[in-house]
Length: 325
Image 1 (spheres, helix red, strand yellow):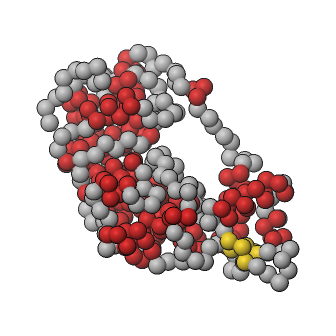
Image 2: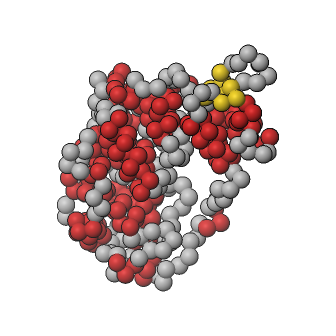
Image 3: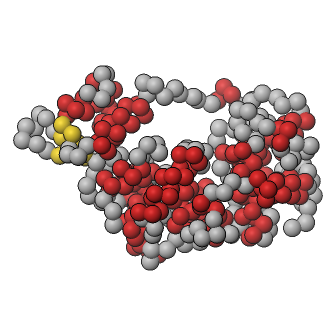
């Protein structure tokens, strides 16, 4: 595609950004299994769900084991939710595992067990949001789409907008900027999506960008402005892990993943000393379909286990997809 002239949205030719980044990617791209020539659309979709808020180093072994066990959507659709949650193990945000199973069941029911390449069809699947739909189109089918994860957003914020980090939420201006940079052809667009994402993951990182290794350092607006600080810093919320509900939920899930039999209430109580917080977290796990109650002889002493029956996505009002981290 020919260079795009300067505009209020894109203040420099698109080729000045795209071409060096794609050339860098050709030399430095990681050898990841979901990029291999024998990858399947299902494998790409699984990778995108796993990579949401989880680093590649943790995802890769889990992805290989997952695809070995459930190589097609129909395989996952027929699995026990308890087995699915155990296989998800410590990837974090275990609701993603059940949403992925809901997605597999929808693929079987609506698409004959195949992943569609149509954006509307992808967005209609349980748990699939705009980022994941665009990523699957680009990386599974080589189709043109606007792929905007946190890595791509950071690259565009620095190189073009001159900001240290993008705004906490995706803006209309960001979307327009990203659209102007995407090549018109399918193959070029898919390559640009992968290259810009990889640059953000390996070089243009959030905390310690390696500007000396960046292929677009000479045109980077942020660097040329003297690398100013993050103007959105006060709007970002950070939360320590220790003592959070996420930690408590994780401990309960770990107990139930390892248990051969339903865990009695006293065993669940032992995972966390704060009764109020623990009970709140247990209740939220029940609502999220991640845990179920097994009535015992004593109604005052229920037992808990991972879900045994397949639930449907329609029962999960929280089924949304977060951008890949």
